[in-house]
Length: 442
Image (cartoon, rainbow, N blue to C red; front, side, top):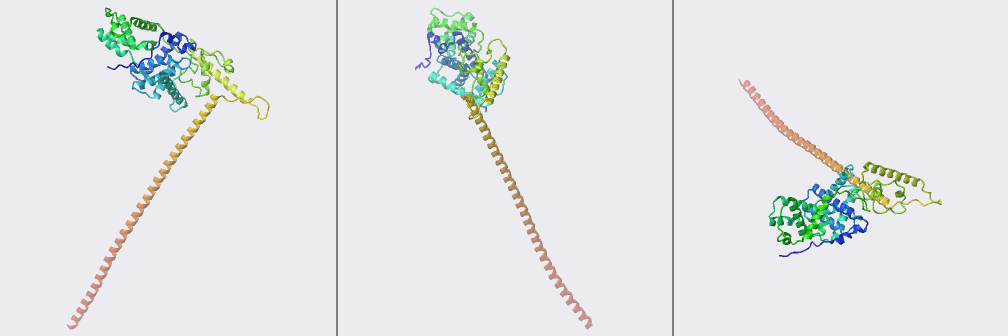
């Protein structure tokens, strides 16, 4: 039997304590909450996409492995979760289209943030940017994994272990549920699948008060240690003691899946600044220094306050833009240089011009198609007219031929009648002369 150990991505406790997120100033509790939150997104999206449990388990393991090498402050947890689901569906041979993944995560975010659920047009610039961001994040994940995405889950060991230990059937479902919940923690990057399987079997047996053989210890037969089993049980108990995970904005690149890209519109430029981040604001940014204090989304304050602050910011930005347009000096005057547009504004203008050009091209194509249809209709009408004219001509020719035949027939009859009439005349004249001669002789 050939046994290949491809699943070698395991870290020690010291490496987890010195993770990239800790180096960016994110504490242990925040990182744990964000890990649980990302796994919840993966689980919920897998249910909405009707994916098997193996796909969701693989996506959660890839999610934990990625954030063991990258920081939560540099990669948005929502985008990484979406890319992990998209990649895991391919790995488990249940692929889903990018459009389906994007629409599901967009709808989940609108529901979780109590935002109005708006339709995401697949032909819009916003959707194309989301799709590009999804594929870019997937490339980041593959690069950090070294394109080694093999995952070994503890689920496949549970049935064999329980059958060997001859446990009651209700223990199997409990152990399976514990294995699913263990994927929300870092157990998948700390212990092998055999150890996690033994831990969930032990926890399920303790919950149902099912005795397991201890002389000799049963975990020795499954290549596990008692310390690893105790650690698995401790982590699961800590997981169940935590409240429901809520999103904590720590990412510098935006805290939203749908509304964080700066190249979509000018409104999105203000959204990342409104959400409190761990990084300090850029020096010299007058809009940030003069802005009112940001409202914490996760606190008990109402969501309407957030929208009011954003609207106030937008109004102030438009006023400042109008004033800057009025105060632009005329060429040749000695004064301040006109304010140059930022790169993001140029990009938005360029993207707007491109979209306008695309719309014009589409209109041109539609006009061409309409003109072609009209020409085809005209050609068909002309052909029909020609056919009608030819039919009329054929009818006229047939009538002429028939009239000629009739005249020929009538002419022949006339000649015959004339011939017969002359004969009759001769006969009558000869008969009359003979009668006269007879009378004379008598």
